Image 1 (cartoon, rainbow, N blue to C red):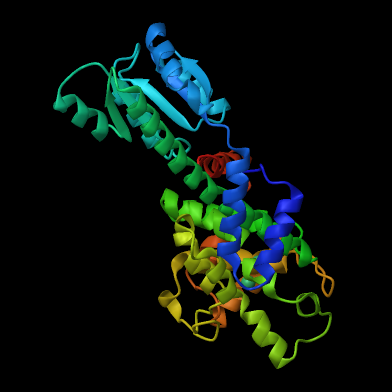
Image 2: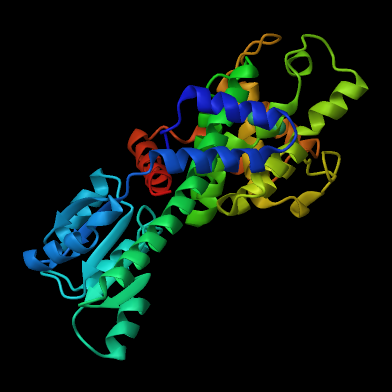
Length: 371
Ligand SMILES: [Fe+2]
Ligand SMILES: [Fe+2]
């Protein structure tokens, strides 16, 4: 995720500010991925001879091999090292290959890691069992060397493509932070926003995908401001009607930037609708009440609270208490969700139990780290 040099980000930034955003990012990412690719294959097999045979067969593909005798060793390696492909035997000490596979596929950090299962046990029932446990490919040993090589290469190519998607997402986060820095008065705004939104989401009992979307939305909601000129973004006085029109376009631009990424699907409604108002006077679609997606309503409350309680060049920061009262006023005036605002205020006012707060922080970190 952080393998990009600053110059690369600048290059992508330049592409983004000119019209064709994602196609340009895709090209650069593909190039970088190919240049920096050094496949790392984890061999999990209790029998040394088997590991030797696989290494000898795959010698020509120029990969680096990391070996584990048992699943517990493999989990440790996967925690600490970058791995591009796992090749495992169906029969392993401690835990069979199917169980090992299930664990990998159930964990967000490893679910996209391709797994090739090798076995010497004949029978289609084993193949079915191997594949239903989540293995991406299944080969009977001894496999023909060219078949094994072809499968491994195809799996590595697929993994490189997935990685490049991750990289694109990483670049978007970097860009979002660049936007935050351009918007001079919002130091650390995204991180706080993300935190408050996820906190409120946890109290509403939202699932992992929604919490993850809120976390990402905290960083990406204003990414569309990348296309807004500094003269408008940092204007000291009132914006003209035309300037407001340009400023408002950031929600649509942001949605366009994020739309091509499948993993950001749940974030799109947040990016597009975080300036709608409960009474239908917001933008861009003038949605009313519960027509506004819940995640966008949550993020908006956190966004407004953070703006009120932060210092800006043109205003002092309100205290937490003043900011809460202001939020309540805005709910009464019909701008904010009248049920979410009291929940949010209650969350802030009663959050004096530090251990509870840090427990939630850990829960968020769990969601985020596993993403
Ligand atoms: Fe915004
Ligand atoms: Fe914001």
